[in-house]
Image (cartoon, rainbow, N blue to C red; front, side):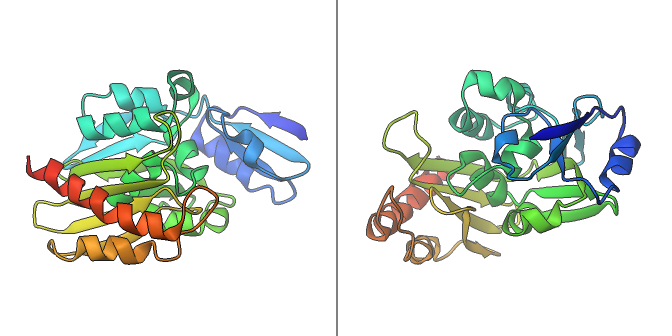
Amino acid sequence: MIVDYYRPHDVKETLQLLEDQNKNIVLMGGGTAIDRYDVEPMTVVDLQNVGLEEIQTKGNFLEIGATVTLQSLYDSPQVSDELKNIILREATHNLRQVATVAGTLLASSGRSPFATAMFAIDATVTLLPGDEAISLGNLLLMREMKVKSKLITKITIPMNVKLAYEDVSRTPADLPIVSAAVAVWPAGRTRVVLGGYGTVPTLASDGPERGGEEPAAKNAFSKAVDEWASAEYRMEIAPILVRRCFSKLES
């Protein structure tokens, strides 16, 4: 039950509200995931007017405000075509109009194409107070603890990284049951993240150069069984998707 509702006008006012330890505060961006919070009573802090909807380039990095919508990110000319396609895979047109980047990542499961890709390119999340920068992978593993009484202000991604994504699902409209995102840096660093299973995407490999990604993908899913697919199926498909990603990057 929502018992209090606030709409602060800036970051400072938002942080002041978060200082109240006597309230179960839930931050709301687009509101599409508000029902996932199982707290009673709930105090909602609406971030619409806080001013975190900018997208700006700083050197080789793109800084994405926490309340930027998926559609605004999709429409940004700074975003690669591959990431745009992944955003389309994440949500329908109507949801993209309201779902925020930070909210989508925080509410994501391992089946999220967007979270899988952002994990692969080693996105960084900035939190206040403290101006703490944490990798998305670490945040997702400990999200409930890390974001308690904290405000995500931006998500930063590298722009000089090549990204490829492939997935398999039961129907084109379903979330993946197996997916793979491969990111390659100019210096040769290669990172493979698998999705389609669990509460968070799975880091299969991350090394200074290419090598062994397909066996690593197979091993990473050795226990990945749920109601959607067997571990054996995922172990068979994951290396194939990784191979397709590399073929896409080399074309």
